[in-house]
Image 1 (tube, rainbow, N blue to C red):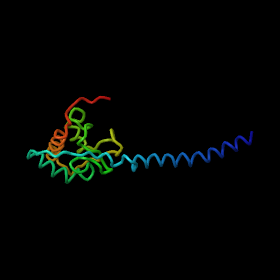
Image 2: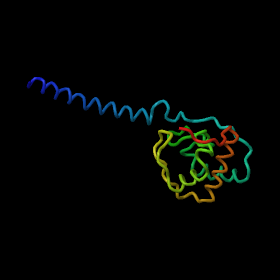
Image 3: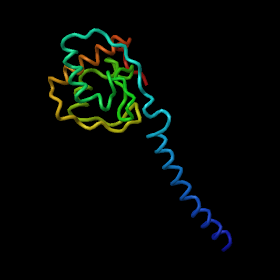
Image 4: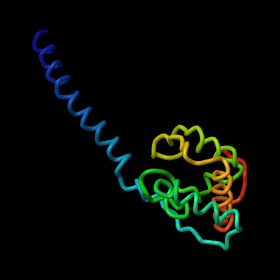
Length: 148
């Protein structure tokens, strides 16, 4: 009976480091693995309305570092916004506004939580939303209900 207990203790001592290394490996893969940063999309650029041109400037100053140039992602920090996931039927304008003002928890993607951006005024958010929506429309993203 003692031999089995000793054998089990040795197995447990080996299992823990292996489990920890495997767990760290999974986390590293999710952060730095092949899909991290590969979420970039190619964005067709339309002629923009004056409101969206102002939104582009606000986006570049406040959002592009995380969401990528023209909202196309690829930064390893945040998802592309010119993506069907953010179509107006699933993420209405108020969802963008709330995310900027309050932050949002991770969902849909592997990038982690988005912190609030208190430096972005509500007027700037309105312009940014116009910019993103015009980019989305030019790239075939239209409103449709979310389905799980």
